[in-house]
Length: 210
Image (cartoon, rainbow, N blue to C red; front, top):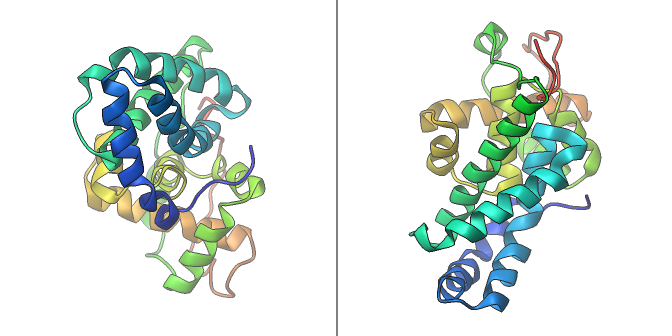
């Protein structure tokens, strides 16, 4: 799967992405390819966290829908990221339903987790998400934390955009992302205090049924 771009890098491409999308809506196939190149790495990382090895297939289904409905999209580059993530998430959930499997529902475990560790640990965990190993670890997080981390860090959405994709309040998504990154930091051995005050339960992958 390779490396995924971090949000600050992702956002640098949003102007180019918005321009490419606008040209693609006018029928420029080369511009659509540019939009695909910018969005696909993060989208694939997000889907890998949802459906594992089936991410490529689900991404293909999502891009077919994106291409079909492109004319309906209204917004800028950042908005396009959110729109494509929403479509990809729907296709992933459809895929899991077809397998008679659903993502793990958020449990009470999240309610007893401490608030985020210092920002240095948070930043280290974000940087570590450029590795395949960290993306595999994301699948072991509670569903709400995993999706929040994937959307914020891998796809590069801001809090309100990630909240729209998930149908939640921005504050809830922001907290889930911080908690997920704190857990990842502890698992990756980043920061001596990364795991303090965290209550662990048995976590299933996103694609595992309860």
